[in-house]
Length: 322
Image 1: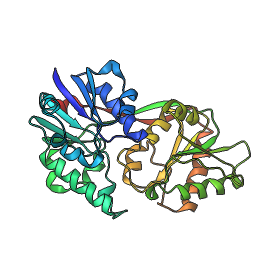
Image 2: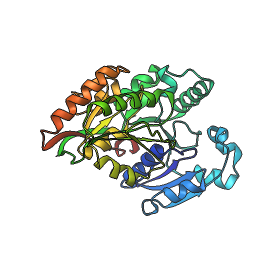
Image 3: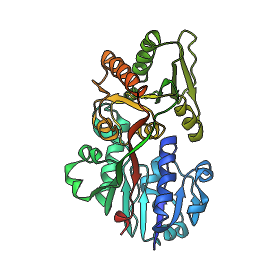
């Protein structure tokens, strides 16, 4: 078995931590895994049963692409002792062995937010892809966002398979998002508020975000700071999942909602086309009237069904680690 180092420095978001944990479980089936993190808090969130060692080295985020220059020789030698280093969080530092970069953020390439931060991120992602032996992505459409000169070294580890599950017993519409512009939270609120005037009073509306919010004039319940288990319980109370982002690499909430028997209503964009099983309730991007129409159709259909066709997402790291 290969000895693998996972460089998880800089990972903070709930989505990033979720992907890290599931990837560790997957990779540990084929390899001996150790992890390098930059925060003590992250260490406590990693499943210890699947790894040999966790090393915490707190360093500022801007030093991470050049981390070997800011650590002592003992730690540097430890890093270079592994057969393979997998750099999570989009970019990493060059080691003396095999480097795999795991690109999970395509926002810097999407053109939606041309900021200094995204230009810097794109530079470091491109730099990391250039020195890596292989670059891993979670979805086929992600490859199209990255520079063509790198396409030959990019491999998709994501697998989508068809299955069936029982439809949710819940009655309501839920969305999981955050306040970043391209996530279009205001659009979600607009659609939910309009639907609250149309649908009967037994229908609930829940918006899970990264910020606490209360609106007494709305039927929407806002929730934040939920654990993965709490999110799963919220999904079970609903039967429609609404999404509105302009760009996504994977959009794990869409897959999680499907597993719980919810119908998916999302914009007619690449990530949603890949993730949605029926591709039946895809609306024109940022068109609230079309989104409302698709939600109404999804409600009508799901309430007449016992089973729902779903897409299941898994990852296969075996081939890329050979």
